[in-house]
Length: 306
Ligand code: GLN
Image (cartoon, rainbow, N blue to C red; front, side, top):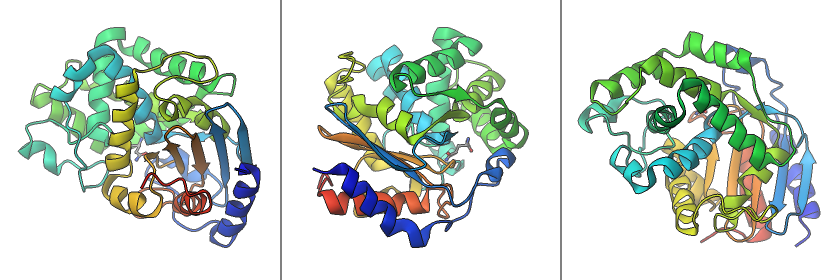
């Protein structure tokens, strides 16, 4: 498959849509980003990389990092993790509180904010507060294989200042006994994790283990067991786009995870990982142009898993 040509066609197809959607503004530092930005990167399981647009422009990963913290939390707790978080789609916005009361502080899944706070808590219990931030940064850096990774302290601070809803979620979960650490510490780590910055090129490289049965094909490292890679992909497929997860499956047909920074990572099992960035969001908080680009990508390549 000539992925360079495919990406060129995708970029041409989304050109008229560039700048549509609304850049996240509830985190002030995110509102400053150029709404016309667009980049895309594919890394195949034999390690070849293809890019188009601003694929080397770093952006705020936000909820895309929930896949990384889930990977690390599952390594610590194994299947016991699933006693503390469900794995069903929520059908609710990413920061919703409503299900938590009925479901006794057990979040629906680890890819909404409530569930990601559980992953964060697991990391703090193992590494301590600052050690948990370091563990996430170290994992992302190692997996990115030389592509730049950093935590944007301004974004983390901005999230803290406006993170009342996340604070409510953490305190509420703690009231049910499903957090082991102080909510302030869990929020500190969560905000720093969300503020991780990478480019499409780095992100697609870093997530390649999910496309290759848990093994990073370039380093040969078994990052997660094969069975777990399949399960992380299953959760991404059903829960990775919040209350638009069904729509993403319908249009794109790949496991994926979005973030309000405008990034999306999608996995074509046994084939490739693909990252796209474009900051304008749909009302559900998923990149609008990014989703259109991925739909075009799977249409042209026939890579939908269905
Ligand atoms: N940091 C953001 C928040 O918790 C992440 C949300 C997202 O990317 N959907 O509100």
